[in-house]
Image (cartoon, rainbow, N blue to C red; front, top):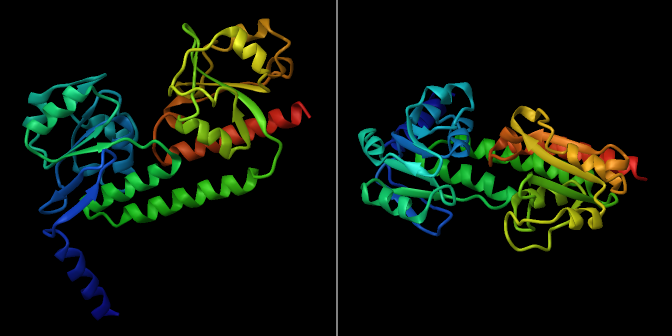
Length: 290
C-alpha cells in the first residue's frame, strides 16, 4: 500500500511541469508548457466552474459579477459587462486567460491574445458541453477533480432525462425580457433543458438565440406554463401582466414560475439542479392541465 501511495505521489508530481493541452470552443488547440497556475477567468460561469473542479485558488483576476462561491468575491476584478481592463489583466501575470466567447466583442478577445498568455475561448452551447468544458479546464490545470465533477454532472442530467422521458409534452413559454418581449430560440441551451424535462419551447422554431416576439404570438401559442428567471428566484412582477389573458392555459391554472437566474443562467454544475426545479414545475403544469 505504501509503495502504491508513493507511486501515485510520483505521478502527481511529475504532472506539475508536464505539457498540457485542450481544444477550446473556438476550435483552437491550447498548449501549455506546464499546468496553468495563474488564471484570469472572464465570466461568472467560468469562475464557478474553476471552483467546482477545486481550482479556484489559481484565479488571479475575474469579472464584476463573479460572485459564487462566496470566495469568488475576494478575487480582483479585471473586467465588467463587455469590457476588459487590459492593464489590470496584464498586471496579474496570468499564464492562462479563459474568456467567454460571446461575453465580449471579438476585438476584445483579439486584444487579450495580444497580451501574450494563451487564451482559451469558452462557449458552452449545450448541456453536455458544460461537462466537456470542465474536463478541458481540468486538462489545462492537471486537475483530476474535473473528471469526477463532470461525471457527476452527466449522471444527474441522465437521471432527469430518464425520469421525465415519455411524459406528455408541455408547451412552455420562457420569458427573458419584458420590454421588448423576448424569449429563447431553439438553439438556446435552456430550450434543450425544457426538452429534457418533457416540455416544448413554443418558440423553438425561431433561429435567433433570444428572439423578440409579440404578446399576440404568446397568446396564440397557448403555453401551459410561463417561466422566467430572477436573482435568487425572487419574483419581480415580470410575469404579472400575463394575468390579463386568462385564455392562456398557464394563466388559467396559475402556472407562472420564477426560477433562480444565478443558477439556471450559468453554465455550471448548479444549472442542472435548477433544471430539476424546472422539471418539477413543468410536471406540475402537466398535472394541472390534464
